[in-house]
Each structure stands twice: as structure tokens, then as C-alpha cells.
Image (cartoon, rainbow, N blue to C red):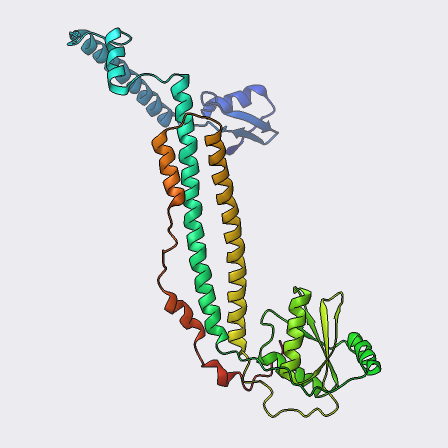
Length: 369
């Protein structure tokens, strides 16, 4: 990029210019950078090109310009030698004429006026309501089918449940003892949390584990009403053989306190055979939750169907001139009964909870709830 020359008497202007011309820098755009008594420094520049390369580039550029001019002349001569031949129209133009209007009327019918447009809008409204009603009825039938399947699955799970009856010879507890046990039980830090499985064999097993070291056991129940918690307390009292002391509502939920009794003897089998296993209790919880959700869904669908029917009645009572055939179709769709639809695969659906493989595996399990 730079070049340094040695010269004598470089302080003279004439010597520097003569050195520049002698090295060919004057015609090639070289720049004199600096000089001193011994050296002169030249900079070639960013666009430095040797004379041979410059000559080749200029020749190529001139050749390209000449070729473009020749092609343009040939194109002009060819276009001048061609004479256009206009084609005669076979058919006359009919755009915007009376013939075109008659043809369009014959093919597509008369144009819509305000009355026809209003009638078509009313037909569309009725068709939309009819489609919505069909969709709602289809969803309602499907939901009823699923509820029936959930009921069958729940009944199949409940076959393994044989709850014990409340014993008649319960141990009596005085009011003073009940008050004392209630205060102690509410202050207990150790408690059992009753989950979504509710009462099953593992619940009674954990109660006996607590009674091994203390006389009281506290069970906390969340997300239940008072009637449901009361039913759970009575069931646990009958299955465990303990005495129900109190059922109170606390900040954590409902607290159920049981007393093991003065003559308590730990049974040899901690898990009752008449209750559901851990797996079947979970299956029962799932089916109960599914049935509750489906019943709520059915109630919502029935309300929507009733609302759509009332809208159709109001439309008829408003005196609108609707199409009689379409109204008859709507009435037929509403009065049709499709509740006889059955779904396949019920046996495979119910077979999930019929296995007895987990009975032996759960006997030695000491897991809490």
C-alpha cells in the first residue's frame, strides 16, 4: 500500500516531483505522504489499478456499450417490420344493454328488494336457531349417555363396598370427658387429612396407627358440606369402633375427633375387608366427580334449549311472515326424540375397575392418606 524511496537532495521540490514522475505515480493517482532528507513515502490509494488492468476494463466497457446499441437497433427494425392485423368482433358488445339485463334476470332471477331481503334475513335467523337447537340436543344426548356410563361404573365399584353397621354397645362418655377430649383434640398438631378418596381401608388403618401412641385422633376434611362430613364421621365411627367426640368447623376445615375407648384392643387386621381399596376408592371419586360435572352440564344445556325455544315462540308471536315449510321443519326438529341413541364400549369402560390384583399388594402398605 505504501512505498519508500531513497534519494539525495530530497529537500528540493524539483527532485521530489521528478521522483514521482519517474515512478509512474503522477498518472495513477499516487499520493505523496511525507518526505524528509533521506526518504519519500507514496500512498497508492484505495482505487489503485495497474495500467494493464485499467486498459482491459476500459475495453470491456466499450464493447458492452457497443453491443447494447446494436441490439437496440435490431429490436427497432424488427418491430417496424411487423404490421398489426385487427380482428373483427364476432358478436356485438352487450355490456349494459337491455339484452344483458334480460339474460341476467332469466338466469339469476329478479334482484332483491327490501321485502325479499327481509324475508331472507328471517329465514337465516330461523335456520340459525334450528342449527343451534340441533347442536344442543346432540350434546344433551351425548351427556345423558355419559351419565349412564358413569352410573354403571359407579355401581360396579360400589359392589365391593359393604359398610358396617353402627354397633349398639358403644362405650359411654360423660359430658366432662367429652368436653376435655374435644379441647385436647382441637389442640392436637398431629392429624389425618381426608382426601378425595374419603373413607376406605387406608383411612381406618391410619386411625389405628394414631391410636397406638395416643387416645385421640383428629381427622380434617376440606371441601365438603356439613351433611357430607357428618355422614363421613358416622361411617368412620362404625368402621373403626371408636367413639365420635366432636365435629367442629375450624380454619383448616371440618375437624372430626375420635376417642379409641378405654377397652381398646388393636385388631390383627388393620385394613377392613368390607371397605374399598386405595385404587377403587380413587375410581369411585373419579366417577362421582364425573357424574356431578355431567349433571351440571346437562342442566346448562337444558336451560339453553329452553331459551332457544322461547325465542322461537316470541318470533312466531311477533307476527313475522315466515316460511311455513321452514317453521314446520323447526317444530319437527324440536319434537323429535333421539334419546334412544346408545354408545358402544361400555363393557371395556367398566372393566377398568373390576380387577382384584391390588388386594394382596395393599395389605402390607402403611402409607397415610
